[in-house]
Image (cartoon, rainbow over all chains, first blue to last red; front, side):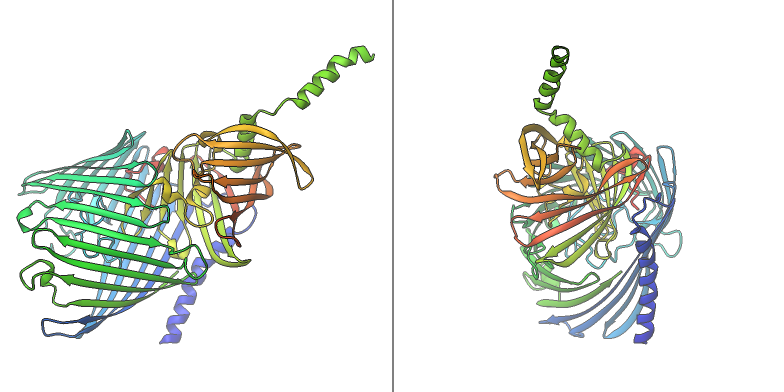
Length: 353
Length: 240
């Protein structure tokens, strides 16, 4: 089994390495009109929970295989697919295949058209995105989707780009192929994006049958050398507001802060803070390390969760990750106090080609 | 005969003594890195620590005019990442976030060879050039230019650039931060023609903050290509 897997990986490695070797030729041969990108990530992550408050296994395991493929022909035709095969053991063992994306695209003049399942994110926030009407549901505990498990929506999309202006029109189905998830409806959405005086701004409109129309706007702006600010405003039945920023110290330490008032603020308002550094120090043995510490708090019920990620890259293809979550708050009576463990530790091992 | 030739000799001497036009020299320097107005180039960066290679990165850089750069990351660990630079504004696309993330000028400077080293190659638009003096470097007479940042998107605050007097090819450069501290130096090592255009093929960047650390940047494959403007819009939902 292990030998077969190694053989399979070797074949994939050859597939990827062959064009790379050809490209290393010194001659300036014109780039081929067809361009293909292949990537594969294999990930194994055992997780251990401490202080379990409900009966259940304290240990679980996750095995992920995530191949992705894209092809482009002469800047006109595009195909892309991204899959996630998941094997999880949490008492019982389950298998699942997720099609994260599978779409085809075509360009004509100033227009790009695409059809299929695609991830579109229109929000500017890191942990919260009230204007992300087509975004995959955001998990604030995992704002970057660290395991890349988010799935896109089935859609027909058209982009018109001219000068500084971009207009995107999308019709997204609640589910053409397969069952419609409960509560999900078809969505027709429009987004206009432009730069105004350094503000990267977008105005968004969405219509879902049977619901009030959605109006939203967001922006990002860089101030000086080290500060980025962003904000979002959305209105459907009520208002939602996000304000945030990112500040980088000269040492390379990056901090992200956000405050979020959701459409139903009675359930809670939120604050998010993340401090991290990629490449801990530019020294051998140190620059392979990434560190990130995050705090997510419900400021209304004063519950919170602290998330620590430590990553060590090994050679060109391997990395090790330690991920911990420590929730806190009034037990069973607050949002993060509902999490049924006092700490979760997982150790991940990733192989990428 | 001597009287007839004298004005020409004096004019030639004056022309020789006249300081060179720094803007023209910088334009020529840019043309060695940007052969055409719109092109694609593969860039390999190998980082060395104490003479031993410890990292390798591969990029495909799409460049249009002086303001638009689009960099696709091709190394296994960085696959799916893209960097877009439009003048002073920059975004990075990460596959796990699937959206453009606005980045600050300070975030340009990571690693020995920074994003700015890869994506900002038009010094004429980023720096004001002043001719300082003529110096001899490795036995060759060189024009020394001082470049000062003219915009916040410039990768460095100040650059000293030595260009060989005989053919205006760059020999070496020193790069400085706003504090005046020297961050890096570079040597320009190899040139080769492509489609009749002489182009820089290899340069080496030495880190002055961490001694013993350097990066070799190689330009593997230049292709002149008409790139559409829409490729360089941050709001476009299509990413390769």
